[in-house]
Amino acid sequence: MVQRRRGLYWATLEGLGAPRRALPIGLVSATLILSQMQLTPHPASGPLAASMCALFLLTAPYSWRLLNPAGHGLVRGALRVGVYAALGIAVAYVITVPLPRWLGLGPTLLASDTTWYISLALFWVGGWGLGRDLDFEEHLRRERERAEAMEREAERARLLALKSHLDPHFLFNTLNAIAEWCRRDGEVAERAILKLSSMLRTVLSGVPLTAWSLERELELCAELLELHLIRDPEMFRVQRSIAVDTYAHRVPPLILLPLFENAVKHGPAAGKRGALSLSIHEGAGRLRILLENPGEFRGLRDGGSGFLMVERRLELAYSGAASVQIQGHEGRTRVTLNLPTGYDPGTHT
Image: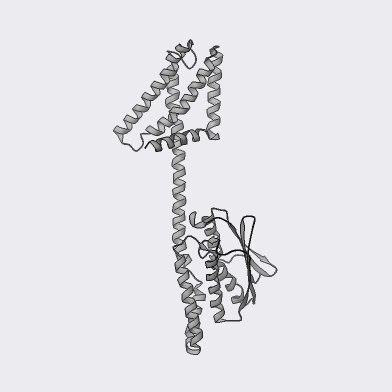
């Protein structure tokens, strides 16, 4: 409890120091101090006014936040308001009546037997206003965090289904091809079944995870390509240029799989024969992954979700520090991922 109160106190002072509050507080305080000094030409009048403003800032907003009656019921809420009111009376009276007398000051703008209630009103209203504003800000921050957490959970729920998604046409065609191979070539059919089974097992193992090694991701994508090539060994060839330790980098599971699916689907599987090329390089604190397939990029297709899903997942996993781009390049389609190195998305989702 003591630690919580201490945390609330320092959080209150930090909130009061924010520019949007510090500037108007400084303006009002400076006006009161200058008015006090002009109306009471005594060396202690200015320091007294400054002390009053400082004491107000150090006690009033925090007191209201600590004693905030909201959510405590009628009786307990009334008691808290009463304690806050009594505290205001004590602080305002001591600093505006006995203290000026001890300093040898006569009546002043902010401190006298007949005007101390002005300081009391400033304490009550100012403390309530600033404390209430800080509470609203804290509540808004928590609600935003809660909304973001709920958004992540909702996105995660969608991704749990999307992660296990393989192109249904590809999957159905593969199963139909396996059925055909069972009659013609049992060995090829067996290889295809084992490869498809291994791939689906890897996909399902990645569903509950938030991150795994880049090596594991590439192995899954390689299985996808091999499964395509079992159906048609001449469909495409793969060129790789990997200059990083793929075991050392962690990425969200299945983040590359939709891109590899699209590369085959809209490239070789659509009649655009040629090489699929993959290059991975590291530099300036970034991991750059380039995937190219034959066929000029003509814009995102209506109904396509693969690229948009990757874009959304990167935004959530890396808090905006990662990006993915797709563009045409010399008659081919190029997808570029830029990921921060040394950043584990498993600890940020």
